Length: 195
Image 1: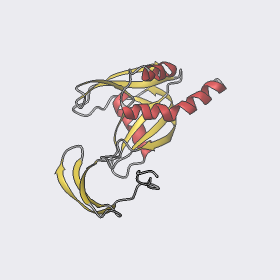
Image 2: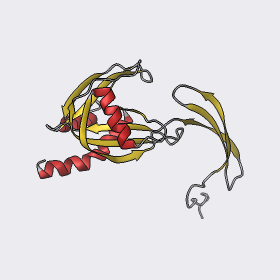
Image 3: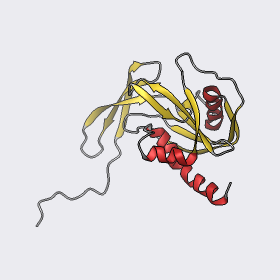
């Protein structure tokens, strides 16, 4: 006879009792979320970062190059190679936000914009979502409209090279890797059709 405890059938959904704001910043609110476990009855407070939704844009040029930005990131105290993106305005449509961010950050505009998917950046502590928008035939037609603290190097790289770079650790931003994962089936289909 085994002395091991039985394996539970699945995790329990904690009951939310309430929340309170601990700090408000320019970027997010730090919340204390109060929960109770439905079986054990234990009560705990958990930290949740409440932020607006974000949008990231995978823009493909007519010659099948991906639009990239390289910028300094304070969280890692280093430069990061990414796709364009940013904070969405409250109530803003993800596709419209993606086109806006693409234009503002890179001066590129395109056609056929559509939502590839949405992900939770870090569901352990964040409440927001990041929406990934795909734009075809992106060309530089607009003036840059950077925020006061934005400063970027804008480039394009062949899509296959971007995938290789990501696999080799040259792209480490998790949300950019999410975008590439969602784009890859579409890219394989395009290559198969010879688009």
